[in-house]
Amino acid sequence: MNLAKVSANGQITVPVEIRRLLGVKEGDKILFFRNDKGEIVIDNASESAILNAQNAFRGVAENLGNPSEDEIQSWVYDVRYGKEE
Image (cartoon, rainbow, N blue to C red; front, side):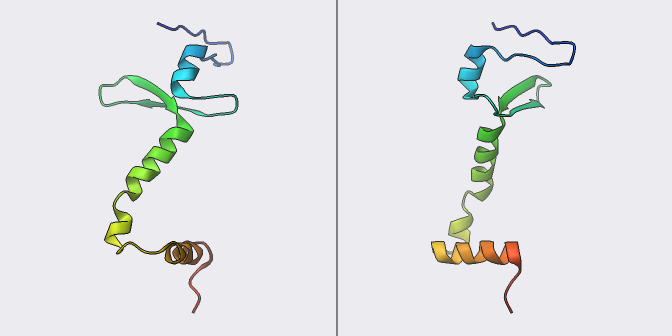
């Protein structure tokens, strides 16, 4: 069990063992959320964001007919800057 003390400013120091398990280092952000059981969970925000994005895009390429890298870059350009007419 690891214990952390809350400062007067509401800050905590995450114990080194927990930082290692989460893979967080100085400057990283930590995500706090409540799970389905009502428990508060902490996670590495960067790692979670990447995994969520990967899950969201899973199967998209197959549904689009396995586009080439150039086609995907073109779509990204269109979304960012608007379609060229």
